[in-house]
Image 1 (cartoon, rainbow, N blue to C red):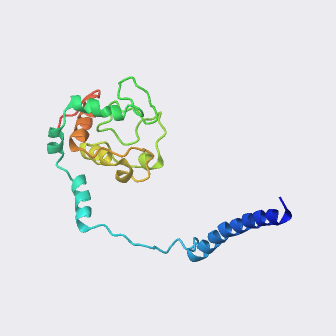
Image 2: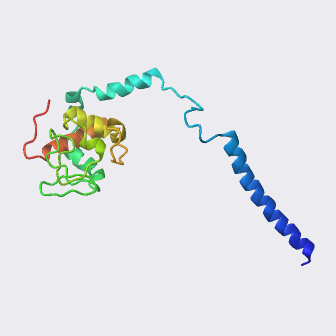
Image 3: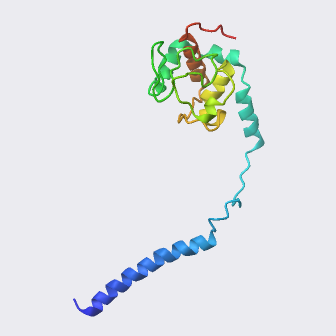
Length: 175
C-alpha cells in the first residue's frame, strides 16, 4: 500500500468525524436546546376527552361494584402479587402490604417507605379513591412511584376492589 492510499483512508476518517461533529453542532444551533420555555407544538386535548376523564372520576361506585365479583378479583389481583401481599400476615414487598387497605389512610403502613406524593396525600382509600387510583395510578396521585399502567376494564377494577375489601379484618358494607 503506498502513501497515497494511506492519505485517502486518513482523509476519509477525518471527513467522517468532522461531518458527524459538524451535524451535531449545526443542529444545536438550529434547535437551541437551552431555550426550554419555547413550546414547539401545543397540543390541546379535545373537549370530549376532558369530559370523559372527569366522568371516570365521578363514576357511580355502587353500579361499578355491582359489576365485579371477588373470585374474578382474585384472578385479576395476580397482576399485583409481584409487588403487593394481600395476606393478613404478609409483609411488604416492592409495594406495601394490602391487608385491610380499604378505608385506611393513604400511606398508613408504618414499616413501608412511601413516595412523597403518597405520604402527603391526605385521603383514605374509599371506594372512589381506589377506583380512580386503579384506573391509572400515575395520573390519580401525581408523583407516586407505582409503575403500574392501571386497570382500564371496569369489571376488573370493581372485582379487585371487592377482593381487597374482603381481605380485611372487617370488610366494609358495599354502598
